[in-house]
Image (cartoon, rainbow, N blue to C red; front, side, top):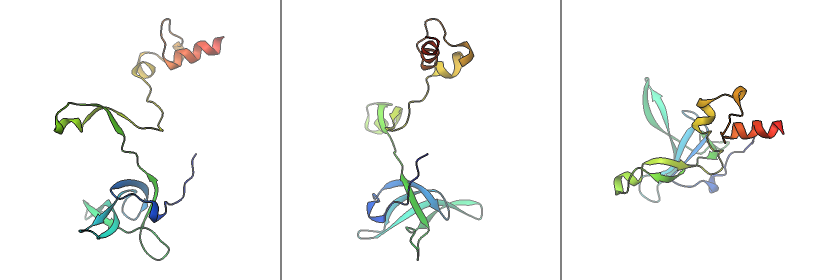
Length: 135
């Protein structure tokens, strides 16, 4: 388990999302309110009378603020866009998230279980591991 501390204010990147701890939510956008120079703050989703609303939470310090950022969220990179036009290049059929393990392929999840491995002619991770364990 990786343990991290609150990210110092001077290391925050404007326009990026952070996971942490806040009064209203645990994910927030670090952004500037108003025209430049404006005030930098976190925007998160809270609830007022059971309705979702955007809430402004300052950077947590001993004497003020209420959002503590601990992790910059990786929004990923489009590796296979839906299309080539300006409006659909932004949407993805596939994305990459560096630092995250690859998701298991459908064969690993659906077609057979560990008790059945190795399956003749199958080269999935599960079957490869079962073959290696037998040798």
